[in-house]
Amino acid sequence: MQLGYNLISKIMSSIATTKMSSRGQVVIPEKIRERLNLKPGTEFVIIAKGDVVLFKKVSPPSWEQFDDLIREARRQARSSGLSPAAVKRAISRARHG
Image 1 (spheres, helix red, strand yellow):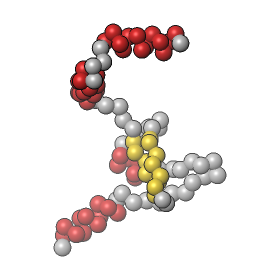
Image 2 (tube, one colour):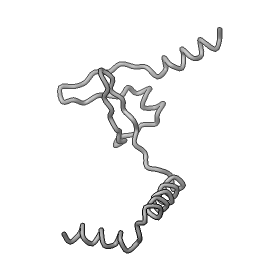
Image 3 (tube, one colour):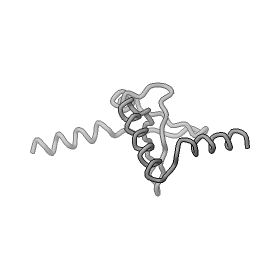
């Protein structure tokens, strides 16, 4: 029985209500901001599906994640036959028209 109460308590601590202003602004309630460590300037991706609006905090990847992304991009470039010279030519064309 205690497990059910803890689950309900955790879910309820993540629920709050708010209103949208006439300018389309939505205030994220303080307890949610604190729980998620949201600061002024935090950026979000907003997803809408039916009558649900989902805010996903955008955070830059860690250096380790960034290294993994670069490693994967290089692997895919090699497997598709893309050479460093071809990349330089494409960049040059994009910059100079």
